Image (cartoon, rainbow, N blue to C red; front, side, top):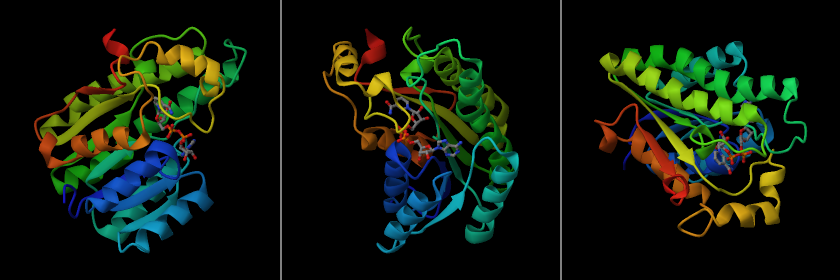
Length: 250
Ligand SMILES: NC(=O)c1ccc[n+]([C@@H]2O[C@H](COP(=O)([O-])OP(=O)(O)OC[C@H]3O[C@@H](n4cnc5c(N)ncnc54)[C@H](O)[C@@H]3O)[C@@H](O)[C@H]2O)c1
């Protein structure tokens, strides 16, 4: 198993790509902490995994709350004794709002998509230092590589910030043997908070730019995250992995 005995916190683990990541990590031997604001769905997933004799627990986490981060990391270490991996996956979309100059939306996007991962690293890296190793994957987006004029600028800005936060953290924590990488999904199944990017006509237009000619599946992103968290990626840090069907290659 590729993550045998590793302890992993996965934010936004109750749905979508985070949920798939929880399932795949647990199947690969990790002890998984599903961390999300959706308590009901998170608890159901934990129950589903434990009923398959896999190791998982749910802990409430709003990634914008430092108190929640401290409590989640403590709960993980209390339950499983250490922390090896963090997947900063929780996020909201910038495609559901018409007013692209809305300041409140800018602040919300930055708080969840950018400050959330900053807090994650702040609270998890000290535990990884105690282990003497660690792996952090930050889920950015193709929206962190290129601009999209039809979505709120806070989405592009927050995802671009995650890309550089990753490289800063890789530089900072390399001497502690903590690897930090970013994953950049392309056109995926819509987020729960998606608006325009869930519209079939818009999606058809976006698909024309994808060389592989289809959207990605949640497990295709989860498998990239699995690789980066596993020891197979032991010399990879500060890297960005595009899981986008070639979108950014054209
Ligand atoms: N779906 C896409 O097309 C796409 C493309 C590129 C990147 N991404 C990124 O991938 C990540 C996962 O997206 P998804 O498609 O699985 O979305 P999703 O909406 O299916 O899942 C997001 C999860 O994050 C949780 N969440 C939201 N706000 C939170 C908060 N404040 N604290 C904790 N948890 C919170 C939600 O409850 C949900 O479980 C996001 O960071 C997203 O920006 C998505």
